[in-house]
Structure formats: structure tokens, C-alpha cells
Image (cartoon, rainbow over all chains, first blue to last red; front, side, top):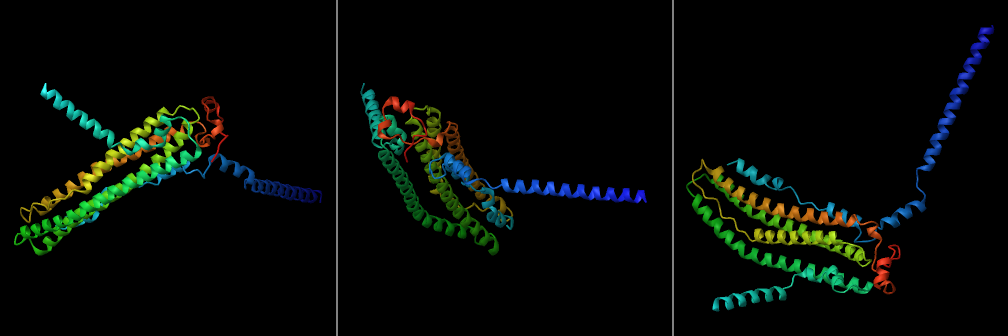
Length: 87
Length: 254
């Protein structure tokens, strides 16, 4: 009888521990979710420092250089090579 | 003695012609600052606008020149195609004749397409370089040392000019039809034409890539200046030499 009561107490303790873990985990998750979106003040500051509006800023210059595609010359010869192979 | 005078005259003529036909980069914003260290915001904008217009005007002029040349070339290519037809007659099969003719057409078309593409790339690089210059000039107006960026800009400009010259020459090139020997050798004979175009375009592409790399190098040199994007043209009150040297980058005007 006493052993049965002991087992019951253990089960209750286990359930309580699991519940506590779940609650704490949930709280941590909720807190982390809350901090992800940046405050408008911070993002405004970043934007101001980077200066995206400046057409001669280094950001714009690098973006423009990166967007230049010189092309693949060998690819352009594909049609000629196909014809050549059929001779 | 007479020889010396003639040589002297020729040299002075060459020098005069070079001064008269001054390259457009003489009008850049950096050149303007080198001549006179003070500039108003309005003048800065105006000078940039003038230089950009000059760049665009030169680009249009070159395109028109190439266009005219290509019109002349077209009839020449037609004549050469006719000669090729005559040469192939009764020597190779009808089907193969058509293929050879098509390859010849494609070679000339590809040359036109690629040279147009390379010109577009160089035009864009030139405008990017103008932006690098504008930012460099803004930094220089605050008394900062921009000599490394300036020499990188000059290198890039020379590379663009060199590449453009090569593209122009390539655009005006007419490829002769292949010399057909026998049907068995057809692939080798026509392959020579393909190789000639490939080698030529590869050489031009190399110069275009070099120009792009040097523009990139100039941009890197510019980006190495601390807080480079925060400099603007100083207002009139800031324009004494001392003020320029002490100017704080955040005191900017748009």
C-alpha cells in the first residue's frame, strides 16, 4: 500500500517536472521570438550610415560592378560548333 | 640642319594636335579640383553633369561610327558569300554547302553581337568609374589623401580606352570565307574560320575583363578610406583650407 503511494508521488513529481520544463521552454521560445524583429530606430540608423540613397556610394558602386556580366564566349559558339560537327 | 628643322616641325605639330584634341577625362571633377581647390555644391553637380554628358556623347558617336562602318561591311559580306557559293559549287554536296554558308553568316553575326555586348559593358564601366571619381572628389575636398584611388582611376580609364579601341577594331572586321579544299577536309577548313573569330574575340574579352578588374580595384581603393560614404561637398563657409582640413565628415550637405 505504502509502495503504491510512493509510486503515485513519483509520477506526480515527474509530471510536475515535465510541465515545468515545458513552461520554461515555452517562455524562452516566446522571449526569443519577441527579440527577433529589430526596432525601427536601429534599422533607421543602419540605413542612414550606409547611405543607400547616394548614387556614388561604395555600396552602389560595388553592386553595379557585380551586376556586369561579361558573358560566356564558348557558350556563344555553341551553334557554330554544332554546324561544324555536322560537316 | 634642315632635317632637324623638319623633325622639330613634325614634333610640334604632333604635340599641338594632342593638346587640341584633349581627351574627355580632362574635364573630370577630379581634374577640376586639381586646378582649383574650392568648389560650390552647385558647381560640383554641374561639372559632373557636364562630364557625364560628354561620356554619353562620345559613346553615341562611337556607336554611330561603327554602325556606318557596318553598313559598308554588309555589302562586302554579301559579295564574299557569293564568292563562297561559287567556290563550293560542284565540289561539295548541296547540304554541306548550306551548312558552310550558314557558319559563315553566323561567324559575322556573332562578331557583331559580341562586339555590341562588349561596348555595352565598357559604357557601363565608364559610368561606374565616374561615380568612383565623384566620391573620391568629395573626399579630396576634405583634405584627405586620395592619391592611391586617383592612380587606380587613371589605370582603369586607360584600360577602358584600350579595350574600347580593340572592340572598335574588332567590330569593323570582315571575316573572309573559308578556303575550301576538299569535302573530306571541310571541317578543318571551316574550323580555321571558327578559330580565327574565337581567338580574336577572346583577345578582346581579355581586355574588357582587365578593364572591369581595374574599375573594381579602384572601387576597393576608394572603399578603404574610413567613412568614405559620409563625405559630401563642403558648404561655402567650410571652404577655407583650414576648414577643409578640419572638416568633420558628418557635417555634410546634399
